[in-house]
Length: 222
Image (cartoon, rainbow, N blue to C red; front, side, top):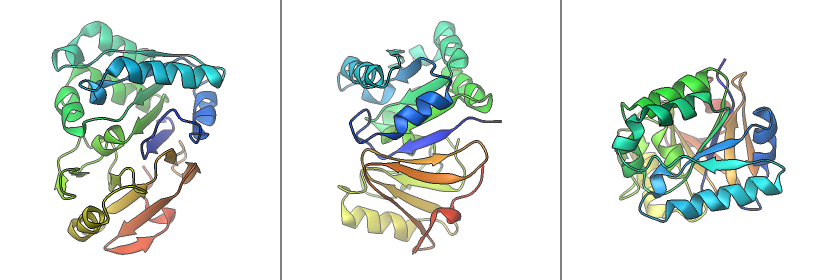
């Protein structure tokens, strides 16, 4: 059975991310393995430091795995570290870079295998976007190809600060039946191993299907 999945709207590892304590517990208080791939051009070491500080405050530990380039994603030792992790966290940054690094890579295969084997998987902002297919293109609000781990869902991160015009465009262009999930910063939409969905954290989440606002019950069970 696959593990808990947390799609975070951004602003990860801040005070409002109260759900991280529960995710840490669900992992068996395992070390959090942070992939700062999406932040490769935005001081990825700072992202790792923020995660380490945040999880230390929750009584846990975190470390970074510097998968920053395509070549890094096919290093055997990196794939082995991801496969053995019980809590994997993808941070925010550039979704296009994250997708190009992970697509069809050894690290991606290891991540999917670990999650399918029960590991906790959390992904914020760019990370949450890339797990979906189609994924929202941040440049204009239309769609592009994602990695497709999550079916039937696409994510608008930073929904509380996202451009209303882009959000409307995304909702209008969404294929029939696709759930468009707008998630505020420091907020997570979480799928439990039994397939039930919930919202946790500082903000809110909203779901649109076929242009109409819906509830969490519109999200597909995985």
